[in-house]
Image 1 (cartoon, chains in turn brown, orange):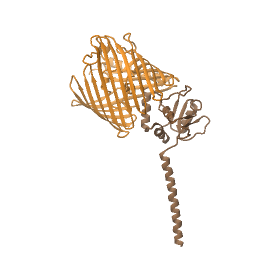
Image 2: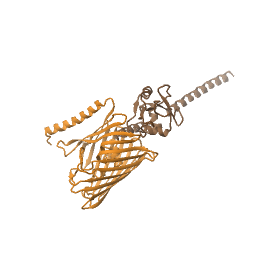
Image 3: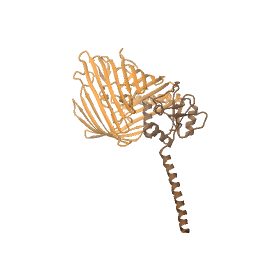
Image 4: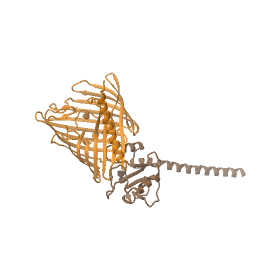
Length: 158
Length: 343
């Protein structure tokens, strides 16, 4: 009996360890697959919500002014960051290199100004809060009076 | 080859002058967003049993945001020029002052690449962006005017189909960058749309009167030519497949020949084996009217097979086999390698 209870106890511990490990690993896999993104803007000019297609049009340099005529200033995290890579995939449907080449070509053709690229979320948020017309994408929902969260297709993150 | 020292000094002074000009612009505009970039290529050619090393144009490119609505773009090229005493020359390829009128509508003034077709309007002098090593034959054959100095209205990404347009009036062929050689102006009207992602369909019309005595590509035009160019283009650069096809019909009318109609076209196709490796081909064809006097009347066919390797967005390597035939003259085969970079 005693042996049986010891075995049962050990088995229970092993199962808990395995189950916890699986839970932990599945969380890592989910995290590696996708990063929720949030669109932020200076509160003065950008709308409170956008369609995904409109957001893409802005980030491709196709739409260059807000309805009130204010110039759109695009702010992005560098493509070497995890969130920057996620923007390339989710919004541009391009690799990081393709996005950089796209913008180099647009500037070279005289069609648009390149976005401002930042190393950290803090730098990007500071730029957006200080520049009317600015819009950017980060990987966290900010809590700052100088920044507006822009809903995309009715959601705070996408 | 003997280089006259005073001539070389003049070239050096001119080049320094251009560099200082750009430096002054960037210093004066340091409160604005000023960007200086460059492009250059180097390569190896095997042709007629001979291997030759070569380098292409050094393309200096500057943009500056001057105000909320004004911006500047300049493109200057340093290139080999056998007609120059030093074998090199500096050429101002683009000087464009742009004013954003409203939304996606702009007014541009200066020297532009004539917005006649996709290749000219998209790739300019940046070999880094060329899908092939060289431009299509219709450019080296002088079928289309590469540059126009003038004024234009331009619009882009309008409506659901992302329409764009260019309406331009310029000095026309035979003119210098700073003056018009006659009372005639050139007119360009171009329109395009992007109905789905990565697809662009365009058409354009160009009209010019080239006066007798005008000098075009170091040759004097003996009689007046009324020129009309009709161009259509389709481009699709997708995730796997790349297609670019353009055709221009040039109608050159003179008193002696009436209307001479020339057709110049090319088709490019590429397939992305991966993001980095892209095999491709291009087919070029130019058929001249028998009565054609303005163009160099020599039918041409060319095809090439190539492989492009994208090291990254600033470095591209290309290897091609090219075959070219002309109605008059020998066929030509060559193998070319090019490393094109941006900096």
